Length: 99
Image (cartoon, rainbow, N blue to C red; front, side):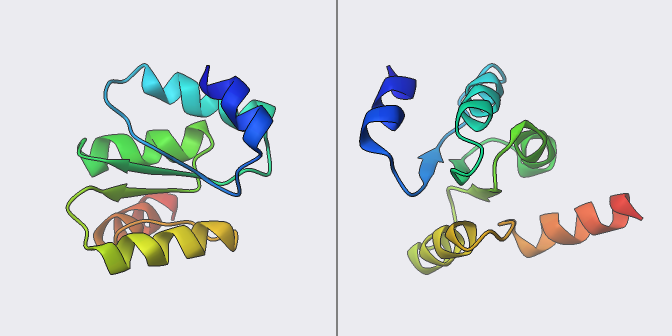
């Protein structure tokens, strides 16, 4: 149903949550079907474990649910502008691993 809703409504961004590991499959399929659609994950799941997997699946970013409203809005804006959205700690960790 979510795929039909996205197709019909043509959103500028999808804000989704990871409740269980299988939800990464939704992100992967959505990204395959709508390559240019930014997907931002907003979740309570462990950022260190799920943020890299969400990005790999096609998400534009990952924010924990404990961020304040201004951080969420800034993250949405960044995702809409094509930027990767991560907490400063997670961004630093991923930079270290990519070297």
